[in-house]
Image (cartoon, rainbow over all chains, first blue to last red; front, side):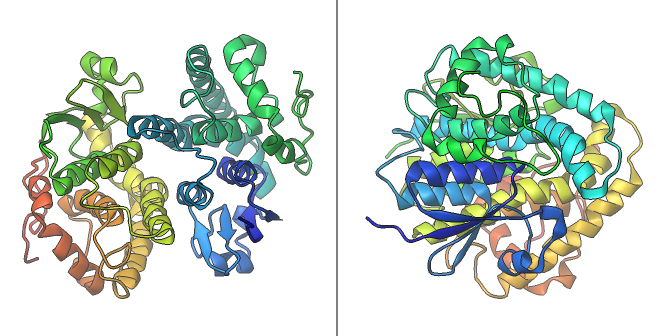
Length: 226
Length: 226
């Protein structure tokens, strides 16, 4: 099947945009990237998606898809040859559990206080980060990483035996934190082995080449042998 | 097919618990309800779900399902005769868009500041609600209700021509706000017609009989002709 080119409107620091980018690459679906700053509420973006959130996927026929989970489920159906959702009903439930948990709880407990305060707030308003929130985000991060280390000691991939949406979702979140040098990989050896495998996939290449204006990536961000 | 009985651990004011309850009733899956207070972090609940969030569904074979979206997708597969996810790939994307948007953005913009401050905070700690947050939640609520009024003027159901997860999700959120008397139905006539239809479904009966300790329901909460 030859697939026509799609367009993804995204924000580099948005974990949901990164998840959909990984999904598109893994599925072998050609697409172009349009960078956006979500708080700019650019007219052209609002015309596509009045809610203004990212990512937004524009189909070859011009139809517009929004909401990261809806987009991933749609793309999984579009190219069924590579199934990223699991083989059984219980397997799918486990993959969606991990994905939904990271996209809601991890995002609120860790990503928003940490990345939101450390980086996005300064980009948006130039105001001073709230150090208490950053500390809370860092404390919460440790608990999630301990859980991931425990899980990856028991399974080759987060959702089970095969690569799935759960891996792409969690790696998307962690990749932003890793860019900012927030993950002490040596404390989580099993998780580190899992991340090294995900990071080596061709789909991850584009994320590793991301340069965020005004912020240098951590020393090992793009290093496959970290 | 005869289905064995399941157990749902839930919290009455939790919109995600309510969504799964509606889903189980619509699907005709027998289940028993166990009420929980999420902040109590009861040992028996943590043994089932170390994360401690609700709802939790225990299967007849004892296996445990968590994360509301994963549970709904699973239940939709379990009883495929009544499809609540849409007929086409694009249709499913639209249903999942609305559901994902309400479960994340509406929850953070409206539900958490409004219900969290007005009710849950007092139940948990007895401390005074933050009136600024309540006001912000009420302001945000108006925008979402205007959108729902616009959408229901164009479609019989939120996701299109048929009842879907989108209706059950949005009605679950709104039902809690309605219990607290936060919705001025007469300002949104199209949405009101839609809600009257959803509210009249047998699956909604159990929600309408809910009594939340210490809080009287609004005058028309259980009234089908409101």
